[in-house]
Length: 310
Length: 310
Image (tube, rainbow over all chains, first blue to last red; front, top):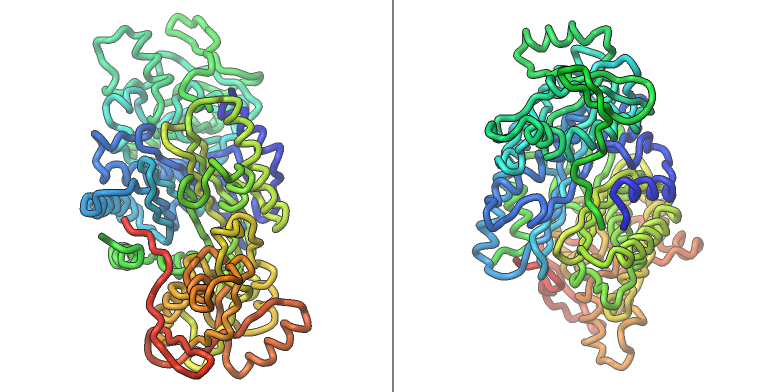
């Protein structure tokens, strides 16, 4: 049994990083030094029927939309706007007319994202087979400001923020309809010096651990400050609601850190511009993540959340 | 029933091309204007168990190798060297140890190509599911010379070349072990002004039609000059052998045109440098492809070869 985390470490050890690649395996996207001082970011995600959506109940429109949106969320996490999309499809054989309608709806979903964020569908590959539906999307992007944001740049003393309430995304269907946080990422890029950033795909708990591990730092987060989404049942106990916010995953909000010295100014500017920002904790020295309750009691937060195992 | 060809046309009509994309859907790869006058090419191919290889008989090493090699062939066709690879996997659930060994062999096959051509595995996505194995590879590349080669730049009067013998690739297993023609592409880029180029993935007949259609030209090819691979049985009739060379597909040789005025010089230079080049015909005005036999009789060559239908 290999976890995704161990698997990525093994790949990093096996494959070196050769220019023009500056940042390879391990972040939300790769950074390429394409020409002189200009950088490009490439992200990719493969979405599978029965895993990331269920075509028995999910429309092809929403499946296509999600396949692009999750990649846009990765670009937002890298502080980048999209420049081009490449879409590969594996389409189950049979029922030709149904397949044509299916593709039409799928590409309408894709187009909603390319229209919204003004970039091109520039290529791809389309195949039919005797397996279930699969869609791979690869996006290229360029930084909003002078450089991409990495998950490895948090520093002790930083304040930690999230861009929206968490939990209940899968049960509530939000994972199919969320708006990738490109506008907030662009606003942050021109407003503040972002330190570390990633997008919350597997849950705050595991994703915050990832950021701290990549940065060589620890974090403290305050239970009372973690915003819980209305998709999480109000009838549940506060513990169960907190667990949902920490580990449901697929929130696709941004998690980032900025210097503690600018945190209050940033929060005020966000409020003035109706940008949703929630300051949930701070970065410290050491390793791991501690959860601090309203009485000031502190406990170690385990790495929880969803990891693929194969 | 929609052919792949019609499907691509529909997508071109539905999705516009926005800068920095210069060339979008329809060639072997997309061309992005990444900075000032420097261009980048992006290619992608999705390979599926039971379609592009059969894991009952194909080793994971060869499956991984092929997934990268077919993309390298697309880059060669665009006149580009690779800069980075992005690999997405859908892995069937179950048998954990077998899966670990499988992945190890698969990545060894990928690494054979990244080592051979000196570029990075820079990212990807790995998932498990209840479907068959699928692998998507996306490569970035940059031109060997000042610009990428397109399939749409053939001109009447050009000579048409292929870089190796054709046919029998699937039966002979060559589709799993071929060497992408990056070295020949690099040599051509510095030796001659290449007009149009693509790689022979679906067979000379259909791929030559694609080049002529994209260029708004016609072609004549000479049956006696079409090189037939030794993977095609010598016991077959000459007609059957010719059909194999025209339409078996997955040859992954380069098909290109140069001005007729430089064809003889190019052929001589190729001979001096042990570069395999076969001049098979010429570009004319009009449309379609004509096949000319050794008696000088001419017939229209149908668009044959393998097209996905879904």
